[in-house]
Image (cartoon, rainbow, N blue to C red; front, side, top):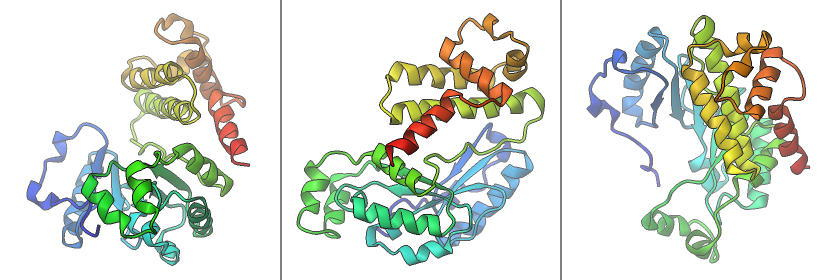
Length: 275
């Protein structure tokens, strides 16, 4: 699995930062391409564009980017000692692979080590694996791993998120910031919060339509011409006909900075479920 996920990004040449309009994701690259990626990050940042870079523990952070560290190599062999290579406040993605990295004891030890290393975010991700990748991975476990990989149920992101919450870790990486002034910046921050509400609703198995209402609102707020937070403070959200009542209430809470919004309720439910 050593080569999995790498991209020959240098074959792209030197893309023009002006060709990007929003967040740019940079996949993991081979060491020889590191300088290429870091140069691109600098040029994107100079235009004010947010960048999300995926790195491995031990690789140097990229100051201009929001970084998420991929724990695949460490989690597969339980090499938790290398978590000390992570910077304080790191965000990581944990691969939930049936029969290997999703076992409760494995998860408990790894998440405890993550918290001890000062990590801030641990996102569980169920990777899409080909049959060949499953066969190769089955050699890393015991005799039951093959059945888990090919015939077992999909690992639970909810169980992982609750276990992470028990260790004081956040389940989602905040949206990479885009330093836009005024209305555009405020709308983007609000849209990010609404998106997290949608994610938590799905994670907690609430009705999908309820979650989609928040996702839809987040997209429209993100690109909207109105200043939604100002409208909320002025009591004028009622004129926005496409806002569903639950979303409108959440925007009111967000704009007022008050306690008791749906986002806080869902976070509390996630943590309580892991107690």
